[in-house]
Length: 154
Image: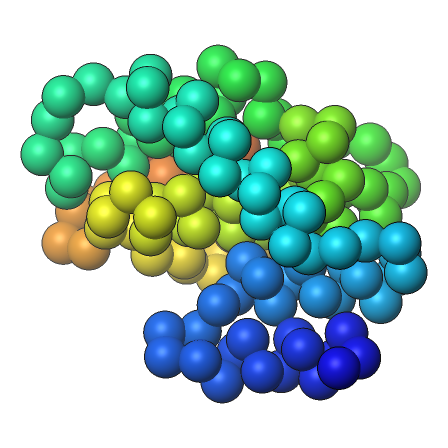
């Protein structure tokens, strides 16, 4: 199956395998990429992340998850102009730098694996995360809580 067809197959799953679909998009740009290898790397990262999370109810672990990723040096790539490495997930995992959307995809995948409720929120010029029912949003680049005032400033 070619990368595009594999990507579409991932998106047709219930629930959609968004992270794996994004890896197949990256495989279109890097023919040497093997998504299965990257998913194994993600298994290792999941262990590192989960070992550093506090013992709290799952609904309270979204912000600690993002902060743990930050502790592991996953940060926003502020390069200008934007570099492809900041969008292609296998390179984000390797360099630990990415665009907010790439970092959010990583956090969403880890949250799903760790059964932490977390949703993506499209936002003008950025991508944010939300815990269902919470009164704030989260910045995937830092784990910082964003309330209405901070969202307006952003």
